[in-house]
Amino acid sequence: MFRWLRWPLRLFALVLFVGVVWFVHEWNFKPWSLRFFYERTFAQFALESPQMLSSMRMLPSWMDWYSDDLDDVSLARQHEQTERLKRDYDTFKSYDREALDDDGKLSYDVLDYFIKTQLEGERFEFHNYPANQLFGFQNGLPTYMATQHPVRSVSDADNYNARLAQFDRYFAQQMEGVRKRVDMGIVPPRFVIEKVLAETRGFVGTSPDKNMLFTTLVDKLEKMDPPMEAGQRQRVLNTTRQRIEQVVYPAMQTLVDYYADLLPKARDNNGVWDLPDGDAFYAYRVREQTSTTMTPDEVHELGLAEVARIEAEMDAILQAEGLTEGTIGERVDQIAMREDQLYPDTDEGRAQILADYQTIIDEIDAGLDPYFGVRPKAGVKVERVPEFREKTAPGAYYNAPSFDGSRPGIFYANLRSVREVAKFTMRTLAYHEAIPGHHFQTAIQQELEGVPMFRRLLGFTSFSEGWALYAERLAWEIGFQDKPLDNLGRLQAEMFRAVRLVVDSGMHHKRWTREQAIDYMREKTGMSETDVVAEIERYLVMPGQALAYKVGMNTILRLREEAKATLGERFDLKAFHDLVLQGGDLPLTLLESRVHQWVSSVGSS
Image (cartoon, rainbow, N blue to C red; front, side, top):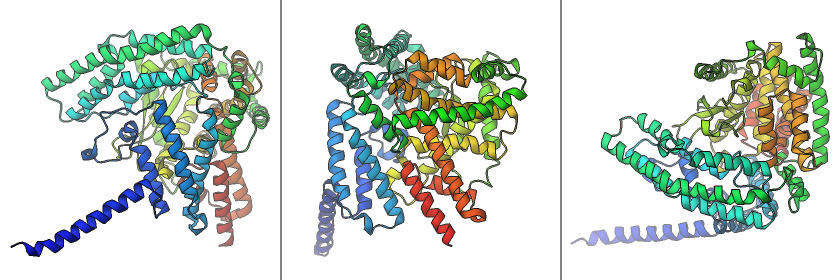
């Protein structure tokens, strides 16, 4: 009766069989297309990171199978990922680069550079401190739950609690890595252990109802539209309270107990030179973080030269302000402590700081059309650094928008002390973290079209931070910091990054003490002592990262000026900015090649 169905069904079965065979081959062996290789490699990595999937929000809600899970951070999984990276690199190198067009060659070169650098660093994979005062797992995971896990439905809230239930597994895996490092002689400096202990003891010593994991969920539930039914809400919060007390706190206590026992064995507050193979590790970090071939000595000498140049420019402004005695830092500090530069030390004062930052951002955003042809679709807003992280967090940082558009870019300002927020420094910080700094750089990269997914996500510190520091200078060049004190704030920020070259290489290569570095930064920048201490301690747990800012800025400026000198009247600043940003984050060596190709193209047209 249904014989007419047999051939269509057989054809469908054949097509399905061929499709399955094709997919199995493409997923497990060398794909026929390099583009498919790119997307497969990214997908395999992303699908193993439920936290990344929640943060990016790239998949539709009906495909949300991951939001009740935390990442596997075990040593075994890390080893598997490294071995897969080696296999993927072998496959990648078997494709013919010369058969690609220019855009294809750029994607190829970016991934080639990135994987080679990662594999070069395999010997140093344990040269870090997973539990640290800045971005350790002990504060990173709670912060992730508060800021990245969405709660828009009952199932989202249940997933939140399901993730809380996995804190014990996650912490056990992280502690496995901490113990391995200690066995290898990679012990954190004393201040790291002391500050992590203070933070974690404060965390577990808080009543579950007052813990940020509970209070942030309450805030998210209050913002749900439509509101959650009262009985469901009570059930969710009862579970949250129970998970914090019975799972989260005992998990965190394992770190408290271990670090308390480790404290008497802590290293002095030294750079990485006194770790096993420390000199080679730092030389690698300099290359990795700057994406150049610079040596630690070259970085140090560049820093000293830049400090001297900026010091002269700052001195001229200070002299005009009638400040002629004392170091640059002491005189800047006098301005920073003036009443006209400070906000009231009240809730209202802190709210005004956030509002003023937003005004600064909105103002420059409205005036950038002559300088940028490409603008991000995502918006940016200003928020306060979560209070439980204020003491050890940097003065500010930026979080990227979600891919689905549900979360804008966020500029987090640290309001632990209003005396650290002098008004003459605010414009520069807003331009760096938001517009036209990190928000333009990150959001435009995420919104790129026609490129492999890794090009929309992969970051190179020297590019991203170099661009943000360049953005500070650009804002001054186009008239948004025309008051002398605003320009002093810009120069202070640039001095800050130049000093970083000196103190980072000083501590990790030339064996400066922590205190020596603090004194040098205070003398040259005039930053508050609390800010300087937080910064110096940041460099001690993130060696080389702080070098990327000034090296990146100098490179972008040099390329711009070389292009202007070559092209003359044909140089277009808007086109230059679009070229730099629409490549996404690039190693500086590849950025240089890209700009040179553009100059040749414009020059020959």
